[in-house]
Each structure stands twice: as C-alpha cells, then as structure tokens.
Length: 260
Length: 344
Ligand SMILES: Nc1ncnc2c1ncn2[C@@H]1O[C@H](COP(=O)(O)OP(=O)(O)OP(=O)(O)O)[C@@H](O)[C@H]1O
Ligand SMILES: [Mg+2]
Picture 1 (cartoon, rainbow over the protein chains, first blue to last red):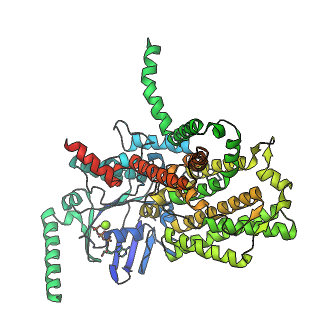
Picture 2 (spheres, helix red, strand yellow; picture 1 turned 135 degrees about the vertical axis):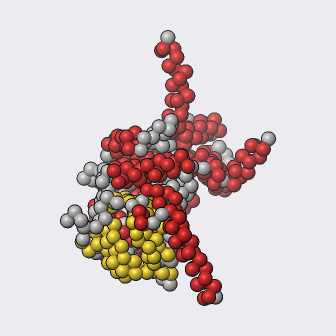
Picture 3 (cartoon, each protein chain N blue to C red; picture 1 turned 45 degrees about the vertical axis):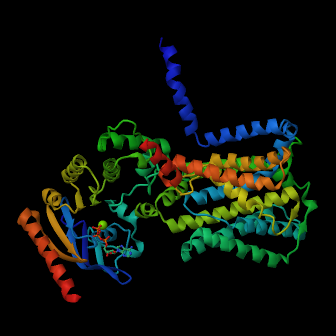
C-alpha cells in the first residue's frame, strides 16, 4: 500500500476542440518525491496538473489516485482536496479584493450547519498560518488586508501557506516563482525542500532549469503535449539537461520548417 | 500623562475606523443631504411626515436593490426586475380578487418571481449571454408575457385594505410608522449576513473578483449564479407585492419607474461596478438618497424634470468617486491627473 504511487496517469489525452494539449501521457508521482515538470510555453504543463487536481477532465485515458481509478464525472477540486492534493496556480489562486482570512479558506470555509462562516476562528487560524507557517513579518499586513495589497512573493506565500495548512500528500506548484525577486525565489525553493522534509510530494513546474535541477528528485519533460523525458535528476547533469532541451527546440524548428 | 497623549493618538484612528465601517461615508452624505433640504425646503423637511412617506415608498426599490447588490457582487447585472415586479403584482392581485386569498397569494407571487429569476439564471449561465444583455432581453420578454396574460388590464383591490396581511405588511405602526420599513430592514440584515457571513456570499465575492480563481478553488459558479438570479427574482416579487399592497392597485408598467433608482442605489451605495465587493449598508442609505433627492428638489421648488437630471449627475459622480477609491488606475481621468501632478 505504501508503495502505491500517489497519482498515476495512463495514456491521458486532452484536447480543447481542435487544439490538442496532451497526447498519450503516462506517468507516476510517488510518495515523498519532488518532481520537476519542464516544457515550453504551451507544452501542456498546466493542462496536465489541471487534470490531476480536478479542474478539467481528460478526453482520453485514465487517472489513478493511490491505486484507485478516478471517476471524472465525480472528480472535482473538492474531491482532490479530500484526496489530499493541493495546488498553487501560476496566475495566483487568490481573490485580490478579498481579505487574507477569506483567501486561506475559500472553497472550504469553516461553517456552522447553516452555512454561516466562523469568521473569528478563520481569522485566528489565518493569523497562525501567517506567523508560523509562512513567517510574515511585513508591518501593516494582518488577516483583514486584501490580497491586492501584498507583493507577488507575499501572495505566493499565502497560497503556499494555504496548501501547507490543509495537510496534503501532494502539493502542485505551477510556476510559483514567476515575477519574483531573487530573494523571494530562494524562499520558495526552501519551501519546496521543506515539503519533502515533511514527508510529502510535490510537482514543481518551472521555466528556470537551474532551479528545477537544484531541487527536484525526478524530471519530466513535456513537448507539445507529449512526454519526452522521465528520469532521475541524478542520472543527468545540469549541462546534459540543458543540451537535451536545446536539441528538442532545434528539432521542433526543423519540423516546422519542413512542414511549411 | 498617558491619558493626555491617548486622545491625539486615537483621534485620527477613530475617524479612519469610522470610514472603514460598511456604509459610513454614504451615511454621512445622506445626513448632509437632509441638512441641505432642511434649509432649502424647511416646510417639508422639518416635519416628520415626509420621513414617514419615505419609509413607505423606499422599501420596494430598496428590497430590489438588495438583490441587485448581490448580483453586482458576482460581477453580473439584473435588469429584468421591473417586469418581475409587474408579474408578481398581477399574480397577487388576481389571486386576491378571484379567491380572496392573501398569504397564499403572497407565496404564489414570490414563487412566480423566483421562477422567473431561475429562468434568468439559466439563460445567463447556460446560453452564456452576458447578463446585462440577457436580462435586458428578459425585461422585454417577461414584460410582454405579463401584459399578454393579463390582457392588459389594470386591477384595483381596495378590499385588501384592512386584512390582517395588509396590516402586517404595510400597516402603520402606532398610526404613523410604515410596517414595510421593518420588513425592509429585516431583509437588509439578512442580505448583509448572507453576503458577509455566509459561504454563498463568499462564493459570490470570489466569482466577481476572479472567475478563474473561483473555479480552481472549487466554487461551482454556474450553480451559485442560478441561485443568485433566483433570489434576485424572489426579492423583486416581494417588492412588487409590497407596492401593490401600498397602492392597492396593479398596472403593468408598475415596476418601470424603479429601473433607474434601483441601479443608481446599488452603485451610489459603493458596490463595485467591477464586481468582487458589495456594500449592503451603502445600498440601504443610497436607496433613501435617491428618493430624498427626488422629493427634496421638488419641495425646494425645482421643476420635476430636473430631478432625473440630478439623480443622473449624482449617479455618475458617486460611481466615479467609488471607482477612484477602489482603484484610481481604473479611472483614466484620475490616472491622467495623477501623471500630471507627479511631473511637477
Ligand atoms: N481552456 C482552454 N481552451 C483552449 N485551449 C487551451 C485551454 N487551456 C489550454 N489550452 C491550450 O492547450 C495548450 C497547452 O496549454 P497549457 O496551459 O497547459 O501550457 P503550459 O505548458 O502550462 O504553458 P505555460 O508555460 O505558458 O504556462 C496550449 O496550446 C493552449 O493554448
Ligand atoms: Mg502554464
């Protein structure tokens, strides 16, 4: 049971009308590993994780979570949360006009039986997350601050803190360092390391190959919807990885030239 | 020593706290307006009668505006309410006239309004037509349907006067205070709780703030919007019944006069025109402001046609002010002025 992969994809495909985003992708995410997901813009990375996390359904193939086949008519973000999968999205998963205490709990607020939100309890826990989990020290920020007043790094901190709080086995990070200053990026990388120390798994999508190679146990490369590499980071040096990606690029250019 | 220092420290803080209160600034505008009219039209505004008449006439548009406030929070719009008001009034009037039922007629009228709202919600979410356009079309569609079904008649139901239901809904407490104001305040409190303390309200806030975010955190936007338009329809229907009770009459263009005042009340009250935030207390005061301006100008001797002009002016000014408070970069004029200032 312990050796079951958390998520297993079998021949997954996804098209949006005529656009094919994913083609016949099979992969596994095991327990307690950091997996780097690499690929060009539009390669299908975000699509792949949207399928894993219940935002989209695949047009073909199967997904298994801890060995159990996912029924997509019944799979949703809520269900993914119940299965202990959390996501931090590329274009932020926060409502910027809403205060922090709402953003920490949105989608699953603490409510009484009539559906009224326990505001005081949410504020107390939010404060705890801010202090202990993400270590906010910025003056003038409290649980009532709208997210719109936070810096980019702080916003990712909130989203990551939220994922941490809801005790998950797998945390998906879709380009969490985009538009962040170097010192903020270092914070995010440290967080990714702490995910592993906590015995959880993480899928890390990132365009900066250097960061991926530094923190990930395993690398997966997508190219125009297809899986073209799945290997241990150990088996490939940073330069080999860069060369591999450059060749991929080169091959793409050749193909488009021939096609046109 | 410390006691002397404290007031200077808390002074500005208190003022800031006051303005952070839901609807505080709009309440101030309301008080100012009343003070102005007390000077320009002392005969009317220094007596209590005019205030009693406000409290009799404001509840219907206020109740509609509460529903539209929630709709605006979700980044949507509902313009169909004048026809729902008419439909509910007709259903209520005809049931009372034919079968002498009162509470049952009220229930049926609200059910009809909710049903119309439900259809509005389905049209908006399933056909994907922007709600501003969809509900404008529904305004005509429902309006036409009511006129056809009612055969274009008008109803007078003077007999409703004196029934228990009439006394409870729109009677005069102590001979002067309109009961409908109590209902309107209770509904306002309920809508405030719904928006600010209930998960439904939170879902609406996030849907209006950013639909994609709402989706990825697991909010079912389609279902919530259908519920939203249904609620808006039910509230418009209740308003229609209150109006019919107060005037003891139905005619098919009854709700049309509310179109401007309701929409103006929602946005003068400080609810964001961009969605994602709403001020229920602001809507309550703004509903009064719109009516007070209308009455105050007339009582001050300004010709009737000018009232619309002034309401339009107040509308555009307050919406701009609210938008600048929310985000100056969204108002091009404010952006240009700021750029100028920083150059010097
Ligand atoms: N909702 C959608 N409707 C239509 N096409 C879509 C949709 N979402 C994604 N696509 C298409 O699917 C392909 C893969 O998109 P995806 O967002 O998964 O790429 P990505 O690898 O995350 O890229 P990036 O690095 O830019 O974030 C793209 O060609 C995109 O245009
Ligand atoms: Mg992406």
